[in-house]
Amino acid sequence: MQIILQEDVEKLGTRGQLVEVAEGYARNFLLPRKLALEATAGNMKRLEKMRAAFALKEATEKGDAQKLAELLAGVSLEIARKAGETDQLFGSVTPADIAEALAAKGFTVDKRKIALTEPIKLVGEFDVPVKLHREVALTVKLVVKKEE
Image (cartoon, rainbow, N blue to C red; front, side):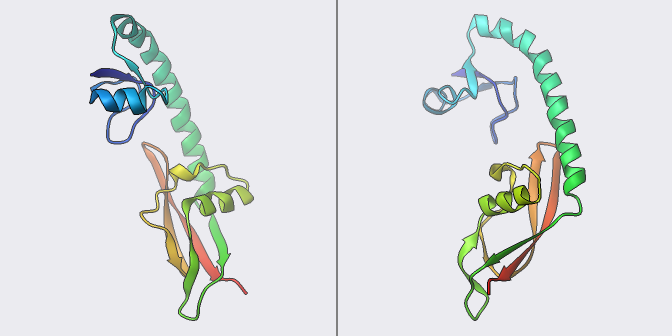
């Protein structure tokens, strides 16, 4: 089934792109979440008009992401968690925890933009990758301390 992407979908394509996907994936996931439109004749005509709007929106999002990246460049976060004698955390530090720590410092970052491959389960210093935009990424220093 051919669809027109309304938003960037990881491993599939970018906004405004015409892609071929399985019918079930389109009907059960992409269309209900308004991530895509069916590629009908009417929607194909609208696509041409939408591309200019998508390009403008893309440029503003990229600019906003670059400004936020400049502000986040020197930020260091500290999170305290209960830990055992071997510095193993009881629980873990997840992207949601990191987003909450950034919010406490006045930065609004969606937890889905924090690209941890796995939750942090040890006390120590970590470089956390943050992908604000397709073309704008940075790392934030995170210090996980033992809660006293």
